[in-house]
Length: 525
Image (cartoon, rainbow, N blue to C red; front, side):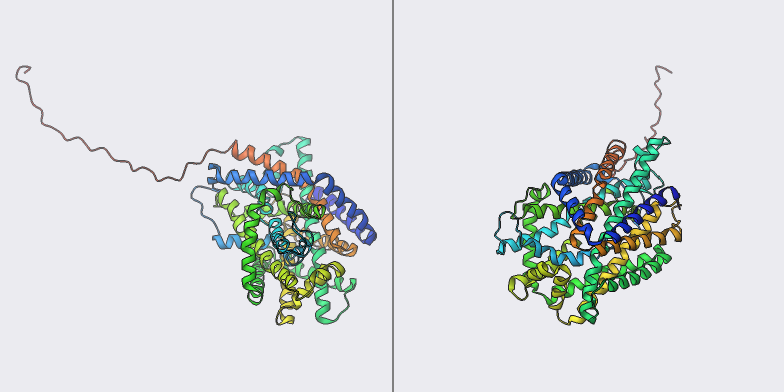
């Protein structure tokens, strides 16, 4: 364990956790003011880094640099395309997408984009599309800023990378300034992961508690939530003891199949034709309005709320960027830069968009048909009650609620365990390629994660989660800019131009000349 990084980082989060627990609901006003300030004064900065990052890596993938292989010329990918895509998707998302994909469209339909009338057919279609944009290509491309550079440093330049700062050539050296900058970058990475994962758990536990309360009749109190934290901590502890092999990998496998299974069931029992047609229209709308939404030029009755939602999501994706970058890089040896970038878009972005297409589409269909008034429930009782109401409309309600709850627990366990593992790697001394962080380090971060998340639950409210994600992601904007500069310096300026993939021209061997008889000239003789 690297005490110089672990002690101050862990100490800060213990202090923040204590502040959340002691401050309680009184902190809501303060956090709401922070969120409003970030949205009003710095939304342009969130939007700018995403635009620059997206354009840069699309160019990198389409240029001749995209042919650079992360490894030797004859290295083959360790995983098939489906295995690789499944691991990327399963590790990146948590139970939040199972929840937000149902309620985000219900919020958006009340404040429709581009001048549509609230409650109109066009408003429902824009609401169906907006969530897919927030979880789509722009979001997933943010992982490329860390994944490509780390993969290149590890497998092309053979640099030993355990922390994000190890992959930045500009930060290497013995000077005190560079050493301090490395510590700052690694600290901000841990800060971001804590904010993102803590917010995920803090948002998801109340929803699960509400579902359990409806299933069993147990009162939805803080004691029920505390009991759920204890159960989760036991699951996490078992996973962390097992480590990567036999622990996190098995959870990831269960993660992807429960998610696919739940989506397929909802697609089949729901209005299948309506969901498919709505998705087709949403894809057209997203392509048509992609530039407007990317640059924040959307117009709506509640433009401020839409902008705040974008800042929240962009901050949240930033918090996961270092962790996912390191993970994607480690499983991408033998793949080209182009394959990594477009693979994330194909498996990650399309995977997330499918949740909004099916679960979001199903919630909107229920509301539009008048089967249930989900918007009234959301506005009066919160998102946990709205989600529970959506689940209650499915056939075999008890079974579906149980499947949903188990899926959420597996999602939580996968993401939190993986995040704690990566953070323990960041706060360890130099590890070999196959060496794992110490068990004490891993378990310490697991406990810190739980305390921090419980503090968020204690304060309560979705606005609290939004504010913490936005604040945690804000300093990582500058880390992302540093990664972009390092990638440009290392790959575009420093990498040799890869040879195009053309078949070699066959070499025709010259024929051996035929020996001719010597004819003597009688005059010279």
